[in-house]
Image 1 (cartoon, helix red, strand yellow):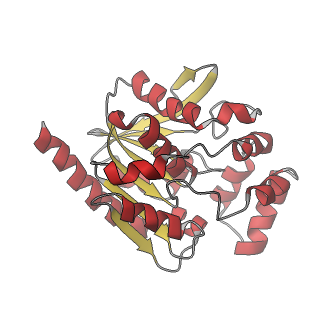
Image 2 (spheres, helix red, strand yellow):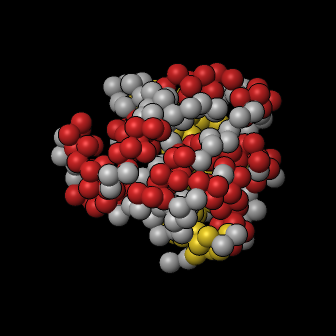
Image 3 (cartoon, helix red, strand yellow):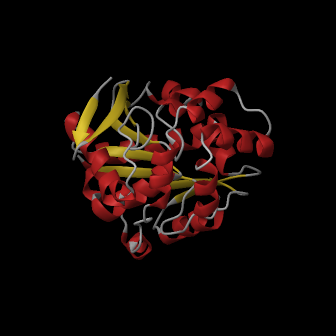
Length: 261
């Protein structure tokens, strides 16, 4: 299990497969295990060198309880530290929800390290329009058992693997991550000037849908994939629906990189 120390916080990651490097970053309350559970690793390890990162505060990475430790620049630097640890100069990027926000942070702070972006369930510079931060913090303050019970009351019973992954979280770390400033201010102004393959996808009943679609319209040549009838959580877990779109996009983006060399 590789780790890299980034400014005193251990960042845990996995590497799977061979090929062009593809960094993947999960959403809040998730971990790199999500990508295994929903078919992404099985699909992409055939053609890419997958670099799966446990975001700080999640999985097997360090879990500071100070919101200052979740500044967006630090989260971006975690990704870069993992890439440097693997000797990767440039990669493709896939991030969902919080991972998408980190992706827009990369656009702001480290665009030159990436060939393309796939961002799911997130807009460029938008407050949390899926679950209000205050509501999430209040619920997390009751512990992960209460958090899971609330999710099941709203959605119905969840599969055991997902329940176990959620219960494995540190609620104080998640509160700190949620409390930290968004940090993507100014990103929207950069979008019209981007000249890089970009794909966004989002469930059409997700609170982030309008912002995600708006970002796609602002980025020249961006691909936007709406997922009918899916909310924020459902779109993160429905790999069978979104994987063909991501695979097609990455194949074209990878071909473009090869043609430019």
